[in-house]
Image (cartoon, rainbow over all chains, first blue to last red):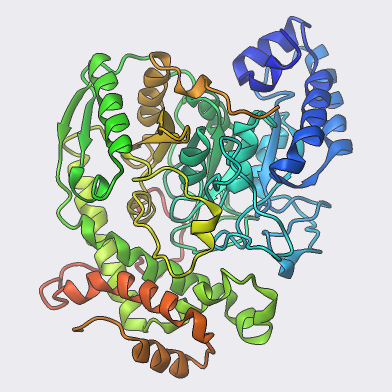
Length: 462
Length: 68
């Protein structure tokens, strides 16, 4: 394999090459560390590169391979969103408040990937506390979009999305409270999965909103996503919301046909205000699913326009988490985050309860619709990645998002590339399914990627 | 629950909460609240009597088994 192609290789291909002794984990890790050193100064995806640790992990993987170890993620380099606690390694949450925090234990998801044999490349920048993009003068720099550095790569798992798009790692972990895995996947042209609420542990991950937070993987392909989910999923007694629902064979079920799969399209809300290019790419993607034999039909979620009440819940819970620091040392928070967090303190208790009632009604309606179809399909975002200038302009409103309904309902939702805008920015398809039916969601996404090549396009980076 | 959120509403809420919102952020906060509360202003809380909050209390304190 040519020197620069290994940056884009996937889990299965790398595993085969490792075992055929065509490539070693140390060679791959060394190449990626060199690539990060050369190119990341223009993209700022990493907060902390753990080069020594990465090489140690890679050497351990080589030793395991020599023993015949068959773990599929053995020797695979990954990056962790800097919300995930990593023992002995700085974990900043993208904030000056935690710039010196060195945890004494790993987050459960970190432990699971390390136990699977992954190689830790380092910690990836996150929007501050998973909600506020770093503005000029902030303690940390924001990650930039490898497709166009003047645009954001999405957030809050910004470094995760950008690092994958730039070929710095094979997988990355993110977190998603209102779209923070799927948004970066969408804007950076990669794959991101928000699993079912409770599917993957949140233990050891800095909280934004307890009833909305999810953890999950970002990768360049749906197949790789299945490999990572297989390692991450499962009950964790350290996470009170962790589910005991059985873990499916996500990788094994990928190749099954999607002929006859019923795909529902809730056009109301999800296509409202969408750019024409987004709509066109989305309809083309639906056509591809039809071509694979899926039964694509329109559906209606009656209360979907209640979804913006999500912010009452998210902001209130986030304020509860940060209240003490907001009152005692507000100056330590970034310029674009401080008042957002404070807004959560302005809702009344009754408003929070009413928002939770609307949430329950919406959740039931979405489950009812998923009793008539197997999947829901929407554009992940109604528009491609905005510019930094737009993000920093507080006079502009917050664009409506297609992602929070799946945090409110806890349903699994996958974002995958489905095209490009005229400006060359990625466009994305969102597929969502029934609780704990990630297998069907991934199967459909994989089938789509077998007949399209959007996920193989590469940004103009080195 | 009628009417949109005004800047005065934001100031009153902030005062009640004991929080100081910078003047140049008041409009941003107003917009955040207005958009988030709009669905609540549309709802008829009495007609939704059967809809309980998504979070319910479990006296035994057991972890969920995928019911949520």
